[in-house]
Image (tube, rainbow, N blue to C red; front, side, top):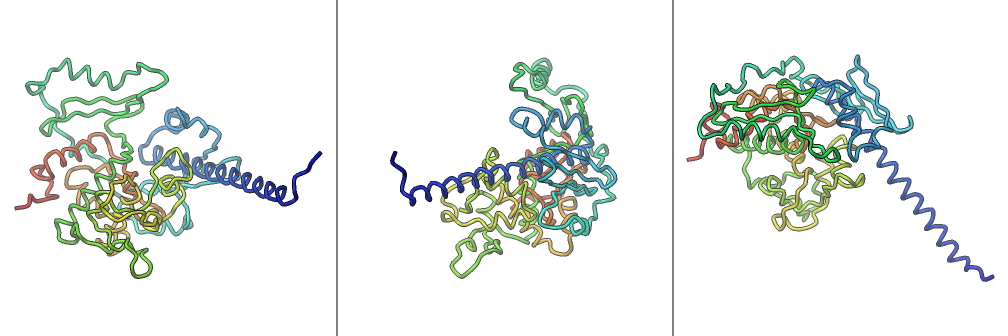
Length: 377
């Protein structure tokens, strides 16, 4: 029986080792992602949204394509206000809670150093009752009460048990008045809700404040400190291009892939803006639009640089410049371990407060009594 040459056998052995290494690496990355995701969602849901752990584990962390998270063990430390999640007791991720700042994944920096960041929001109350929308005494014409009720009902109906909507809150406002509102089981008008990518719009609004104050302009460039030698075209990327997600920076936004840029950034990096800014320029700025959460976190670092001062000054800025002015007082914008806001994803606010933010946009930032913006001209 013929045997393979030694060189081929050696090559096959190397290939087998590389294949095993690649599989183990993907499994390791997946385990890290799973532990970080479970710890982060559980911590924010319990400490920020004040939800019951059992409900979070059942309704948020064991449904649809997240069933594998059932095998990730999570422990809540109520005294330390933290959550630790682990896979087989070997791979661990910890998330800590700080009042007013929400929850932060402990990575790249020790917990003690993260907790040393000055927190001016620790004593703030997250109650928005004094700023609630007035409730309309009657539905304004020409709204059909029956049709509106049917729309609200449909949002909370589950016609397909395999593809559930899991609606948690619905608020309808017209002309600054509340005309419909409903909440799912375990949620209320006082429950802060995670905005995910709606948070990006808040960062856009904060940028608008700085631009109107003359502290930034849309054509400002040189915003990426990671630029290396002369000729690095990342230095040409403007604020406008970052806001429009046309920077040309390489960034993969695939949440089902544990090796994609967005999952690495959100669940394994202590300085998310630096991670995004260190991506290479794959094409010239303004050539193509490409959805990228990383660019929003670069913008959060730009805000930090422009605001200047201390950590406390930066943490207070969104509240002083926007949230307090529109009555969005339940808002909790969470930072990463480096202290930069995760503006791509992590803002919690009640449904009514999210509606107040929508009202600001509906009225072009003016006429709301907010004092956030002035109409040009």
